[in-house]
Length: 211
Ligand code: URA
Image (cartoon, rainbow, N blue to C red; front, side):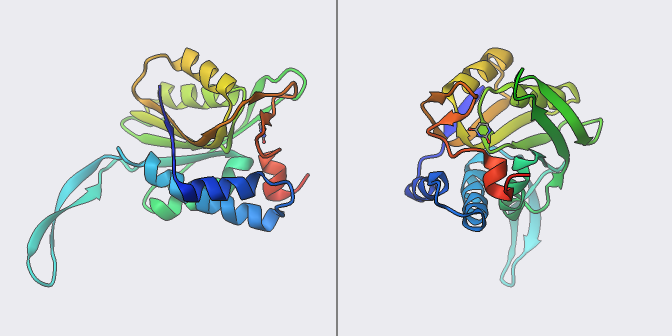
């Protein structure tokens, strides 16, 4: 597993406003979107491209285009949805699939309740969007799901990660060079309710309200 902590003053600034409990949902959504666009820039560094011949108004030249099969972006419902637009803004030709995963708050076990993805992901670069890498259990379930279907590379984009979750994911995926985590910050720890500390609270609730 490769971990990339995106380091940039704009990311730090936006993240601080996101963390602030006084930030209302509308601003939270806007900032989460902007933050994902910045993370997407880092996360797409090794997207595969191929040469393409084009003609500018002045001359022929060789440029680059994203190779087939197209990358696929997979928000984990519900909170990952708040990251989708920020990601597809950077990579509009990507396909979009969905995975619905939730954790039982008592047992912390992960249940997959929705899946809209191709069965065959051979050769695909998959981008998982999940704002909070907390225990790591849903992330591991999602990564395994994609690798079992042939994904060439899996990149997880998270706003925040907990050291415990990163360790659990690392133990599960080991030295695999085809699993990447890109995050804006690795926070201090998880609390007894598996919330990230200091974190930003419940990302789904802060994006969409408590339902
Ligand atoms: N999920 C959240 O939304 N917040 C956390 O702190 C941990 C998991």
